[in-house]
Amino acid sequence: MAFTQEELAAMRAADREIEADFVITKEEREEARLRDRDSSEQMKTPQELKELQYHREYYHQNRERIRERQKAYNLEHREEIREQKAKYYAENREAIRAEIRDRHQADPEKRRARDRAYYQKNREAVLAKNKRSRERMKKKRTEQKEAVACV
Image (cartoon, rainbow, N blue to C red; front, side):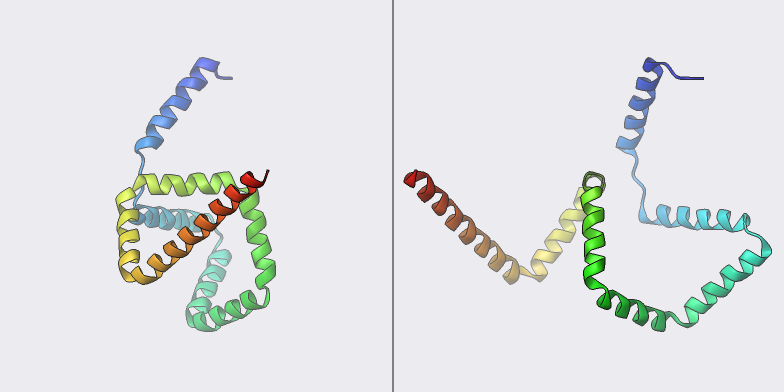
């Protein structure tokens, strides 16, 4: 059964209303992740569960070695990984920016607190960076004015 345009519009409005107030905490996200993992494990055969348990134990016992191997791979394939990430970002830029914007809007005080803490910890570096930026912009404006004057 297809929905009418009015019904679709009402559903979209209801979705927007729900999403506007919806905030999930870190703890709720972790609980959901564990529930999803448990439910997916319930669908596995005994052999698949045995293999899964083996892999978890192996990872736990060899965690440092696996991390070192991954770090070496990342260093060796640095440019390739950078290109893949740049391509992904270019293809999904709007979705990524929307996700970041939503996260910041969901808890703006958390971001402000993090920014304040960073500023207090790195005050001198932040001030120096801002000064360089102001000087660069001042130089750029001067060049633009000179270019316009020459025309």
